[in-house]
Image 1: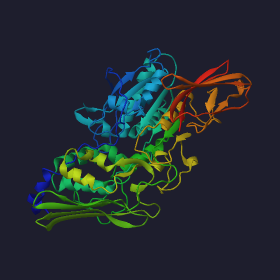
Image 2: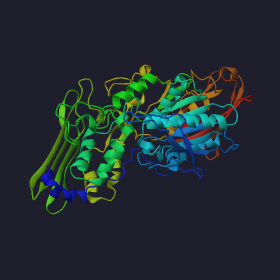
Image 3: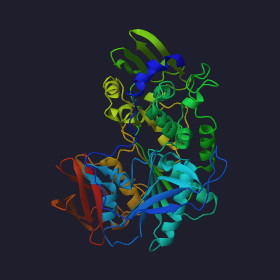
Length: 547
């Protein structure tokens, strides 16, 4: 193979990998005003699985105080997710909470909550360079513990914290809060919101992993090698990925597949060890645990098992071209060729590379499972201006794949990734689950409403409601608004008013001595509104979504 290196050098200059993205910032995103960035260092060191000593983790954060009194008294911590290279800064994390021209953080600040964004940066500690966005989840959790303790010391009053963890941030939050309970450290936290976090593992198509590694190792592409080193082989990726190329390599080889290792395998000495450690910690007991996910709850798949991702010929120059074919992992108990690469020189094949995959007997291959989706074109940075990569992306027959499976985001331990989730098997007490698969950590009007309801009241369902005086029985609403009345307010005279999000009064109606519900037909357009309910003795404003 090495005697083909001169031919393959042609690829080195042209077939490069751009910045990989696993979380896009929405169009028309709302960014925050400039604030002061501060640094925080963990009080508890952590020694990774392959490290010879423990290191103190570091983070950077900004506090965006509320727009009501400007006092840090109701902190909500929002964490960074998987972000090797720190391509998504604090401003980008804030902006990622945008939806429909609004921003969840802005809405909360208008209601008196303070937003604390905790980012995982690049830093050096104890002489070791650490990429926080791809570092051990445990070490990042120790940074969060320090952040929690600092906020509890600095805040005014005794309001407990809320922690929202998108993606890997959901694992960091879970680990930190459980660790604090297990070590008698008071977190003073009332609510943990997991946002499409991989509690049972994450997925990047193994065919794509093999391809990137092949071009890094055999073609000598420096950018591909950087992707392998900093992303695929980062501690966090090795802890989270259910199927990792390191689990399949032939002994003594850095790219060839061991033909006996075709079932999904995690990174040796990382994946199984981390999952066992996380399962041992469990979930925090003194915190309300809820989740909002992006994967479908009704079994909708992302493509089909074994589907062709791409099957194309890439022209490198007048003498050299490459045949590339990638597939999703196959149906249950079936084997297929997931990666097939042939380098041709003057029309003759001079190098070939193939890998195979076997799906387990109890589940179809993970790539097409219901889940929050990732994008191959995003993973290749939309080509980064590289004409070869742009041609590759243009030839994609299947761009989206299951990145965070529904079962994983719900923390349900079921070996069948395609089963209809039984929510009784999930440790969470409340859920936002869409019917269609959504892009990973995408905030929608409906999921934002779920988070707002949880943060405001601690619960959203009418039967469980202990705090709200009035609550929408359905939100988003259909053709009629159905308002449930707390039993202490029944029989009073009500005035209900609907405002636009900018404060314009749109509808108003009065009710005399209603019993349990207020039913109100409307002709409102789809969008977000404010519903004000006034019983004469109590007033509550509810954010309402009309589908």
